[in-house]
Length: 499
Image (tube, rainbow, N blue to C red):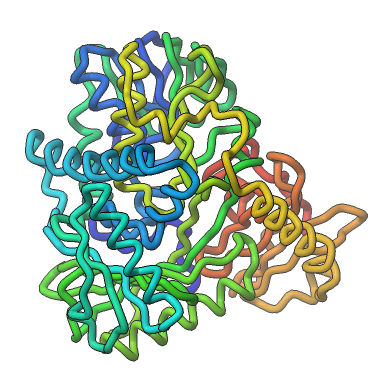
């Protein structure tokens, strides 16, 4: 809805979440974890089960940022991916990826059951389908590869969708769930016996054995960066994983499909369902766009709303938000030690919008590594691989796109002053020689901050859906006030005098 705060998502609004304390003072634990999403909280729970004392440090609210903006599918079906992984990494490593995803979704159910968490887990088949004959052979090949890798795949045209498809692959034994209920419920099981979960405590400095926040510090044997993209310059992952964003909407629907769905062709769209207060909601997402490109964002959002309304008889769209994720240039997430030899940080990034299964698998890997155990999945996910095995050309193209946006985009657009802004409009302007990001609200108040991202100096772009400033280069997001929503930036955008 226009004017909504950035974190007003369907998942955040339909979960009752208890407050957790902020860090106060200094403490010492075995493992410190920065980030309270599905990676950080699951890692903490697994480590505590292994006898470790942990401290989770979350800058905002547990489970309500990237995890709370997801579509929350518990699935190992990740579009047309396994044939790509097999060609890049070989069959054995592609099989490891498959095993990790299946293990991840099973672990969610196990943890929810063990701790009595009401996470609305609902068994549901997953489908990737096509209405374009150019993708039929790819779907057929994906099913063939998936079966060889041990995944529950089959070829079908019977999808339960309210329109015909040319081909589809079906994955059985998958599920969907409520991500905020799950993560917040799991977080509540961690405090005690020397372990902690802290909210509203932002990491401002870090080293491999210590984290300093705005409210105190934590010393530990290891530090885990469960922060979407590692903060600052750690591992230089911003150079080998590029950000993409997608609109997500939720609305009551009359035509209820019996699975979770994603199409293979462009524009890419997905849908799943969730029941709440007697209604069935369709949670739909896609297609992707570059963060901070408002024209592309609005075009994607408009097309998604029309698609959901036309095919599923959606009622009024009650929730709109933008989700963001990173994709590694060789398509495999980066999980594990940030540098060779295990003397850096433990990290997890590059999930390419499949953060539920990947995030849980990442937690399983990190928990093993933090306690000196081996994990065979590291063969494909190794975060310290110096160069991506493939895909460098794609990254160059991404940066050319960003550069074109910065040079030829906002700076050439009107308006040129605050007075020229209409209520509800935003712009990047040159004011007294500085690049300024300005938004005028419906009451006529101008919110102005520096347009220069504090991570590496790129110009931010406007996100009209969430009313945030998003960096197209490396994906940092900022409030209207300039406060960091998530990194890799850790410093706010400077405020500007408007009158």
